[in-house]
Length: 293
Image (tube, rainbow, N blue to C red; front, top):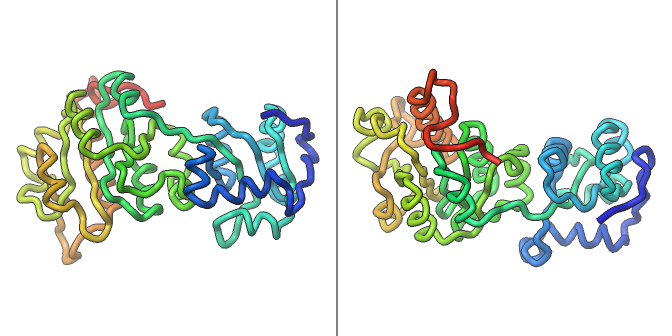
């Protein structure tokens, strides 16, 4: 969709604009699924969406934010994307944060089919979210997987919507950096990843072996899909048995456990480091993988 808004002025959009009403509806999952569109809020998310060539169809911006982020707004307008100037009150209604940063884009879905992840080449490291319900945790795991050089994040069907506003914000732009699979059947995802040569490792605090175990460490350099469970109860036994091996994060102090995001960071970085050490000179991408999209 193309517009003629000036990068300096944009086009003023009132509270009853059809475009604004359509964007506001995207705060609900049913409308996101129907329109296959979502909201990316804040300069970091908007910039990553635009520079990573996601399908951005509209930008809403307040006058102060337009001044603060002039270069970004100008680039978006120059690309033919409609820029709508809105009041602070309207942005407050549209955004989902307590203190909006005045910049919000409507983006098309970016997820890919699971088959596309394995068709691109043998992935070396994948995060598989099973029954992860908290959007902040899910977004943080996505960001961590991106930082660790993972090649995909799979949101299994019982997990939170990756386009939930809090999840998008918590990902800090990583949603646009690597392949994301949404709504895959967990069992199907495990079968597909295993057929692609990945070991399925369940992060389970009740496992008999931990990341410190020499045998576990010996396997970390192999292509691996880490499966992470629900924030409150972890992975139930019927899901743990689907993995090739359950592994616990060791607790050295008196804490009962780590939260999901922290545990995921420990596990993903353990694999990433082992894979990089095994690769030539310790400077390559994880063994068997290719650069993420």
